Image (cartoon, rainbow, N blue to C red; front, top):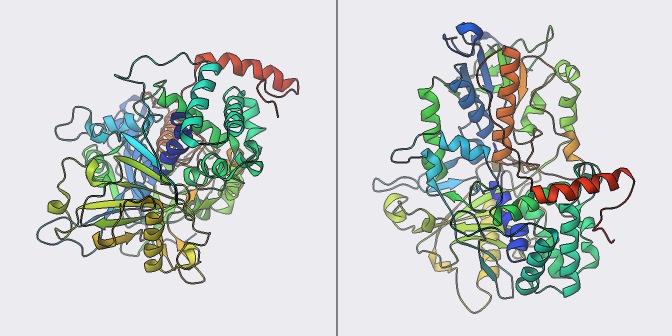
Length: 605
């Protein structure tokens, strides 16, 4: 955020908070046997109380689990097929051979989870997952870090509280362009130490996007790189690092020179509204109070099993054919390696786009051209590494963004956010007292130790390089925050393989958002009457590959399925991003200007 999706990162959206909110806050296999997806019980999913239709959900990440949840609640017979582990990129995982003395293994993860207040659909799902002692289910396992930091290399770090004017925070200010201008200008001037004219210019560009109509956003700004939109080439290094690179490479795992202004601006706008308490589900920064599987994924799976969902773990989808106007079956390989044809009434493809598009047959692609357009969607590396320390880290109570690090590192010290866990007593060998979870967003630039990119380094070299970059950001102003003597061990996402060789691979790449991406995102409902898409790449209101996007797309897929099945079950709610009423009038005015071929009112060049 991951965006995982699955969704990701939503560690990627964390850095949206650490970037824009900070700017606003501080400125085909052959089957050998056949199997049915699931038995068809009597239930409300079928019209008139008839046997419920069967649904095969392909993929057990956030999108797949959400689809299964919504369908099972409506009486459908659901089977989820997942080749590795439930939770996808959002899951936590055990560090092999790390448990001793009756403790749990050390907790590892693809990347730290981040569930900001701009999310509404995912929190709704979380509230519906029971958790012992929690009135609002696993949602009550969310906690709000109090602060965030831009860790500068060779300079004093920028540390500030997370802004939140919502519940208990007082009345939000009147949202007018002038109020927003004053807020951003003051915060950027005082906190980011940018030249006054650059601060004023960036605020002006923010107002241009904020008041731009949907047509201008979808066409002009979708085709304009963020780097160009904010004129970064002509600005100072600080401007480039914080406001250009800091809100793109670390946010959406793409380069500022390529990232769509529509994507960056939309998320930035949402976080500014969130920090003002407008249209938000909660604070801008929320994380789980325990490892992800303990706090969320495992209770979710248990709940879905109680609703009758059948899980087939270790079953890999090999192809999705097309015949007689529909998907007749899906070819899979089961946990024993036997090839089978899975049949169901409906199929929801909830696999990551880089896997899914390889499985769609030529005939299926021809039946719906939007499937072929998915070949134009791009993915990139954004991967986590955890450092286990023998002492608590005195960094801060929240996220940090090492904006000067060559590998664009973001991180959070987790133990302090897990109040019900005694880290050394509960995990590992009793010596590890904290977990510093770090996301590496840039894998193609040279580091500071070896002069190699992350992909060119071995796993051990990656660990040493990341540790060195963290120390360069945190130990550079006279205080030793990270000590070599406190480093217990490290764990790099096992999805990364072959680094340090000519052919590195990554099982868990994330969708990125260069210009034009918006127009290639497919709808959840395809032209094939029994085939649907769910995932962070599907077109939803939040224009970023996130867990929220995965959740919302699954809801859209279920709604389309309900329509085609003729079900009278209640439709899933799909909550859009907040739109400020006071700004909508300005956007309507801009729509007139756009149609007349005029620039935005605030666009002074």
